[in-house]
Image (cartoon, rainbow, N blue to C red; front, side, top):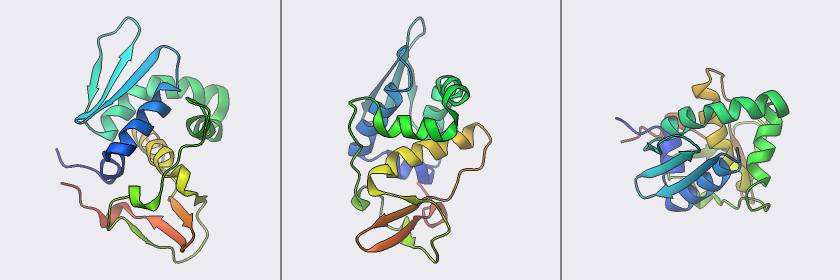
Amino acid sequence: MQASWADAVLSRAHARGVVARIASALGHRLSVRASPSGWTVSRAGSAPAVCRTARELAHVLRPEVEVLQERDGADGLLQRMLTEGEHRPVTVTRGDVPAGMVRAAPDDRARPVRPEEVIPSVLHACLLEVAGIAAPRLQLSDDEGCWILDPSSHSGG
């Protein structure tokens, strides 16, 4: 299976741990552990699921996400992803994004995504994709200006 642009971002060692922490914060019945090959998701009363790609992880997390979306809405879900778990901001730098996937933004119409929001925003986009909802374009703001995470510039592999 060819890797997606989201896999390219989320597969980095630092990102795996961040995603596991965020995902674990989605529900008390859920435990997510990062491993070199992906994530292992454990749910009370179920056999553990091994997820190798961001899309597989999103499928497994979808039931928990739907409950939270009904309660908090999509914006509340992203906020929860950013703040819950260890109750501190997720720190991500542009260096966590694979080379070739970041390009200068031609304008500032997209919602800016701060560096600490990159990984949660990519995971959120995966969850929206699995749910059949178009994800917003992700724009990163840093000291060098505005940048866009550009899925089309990464072919996977």
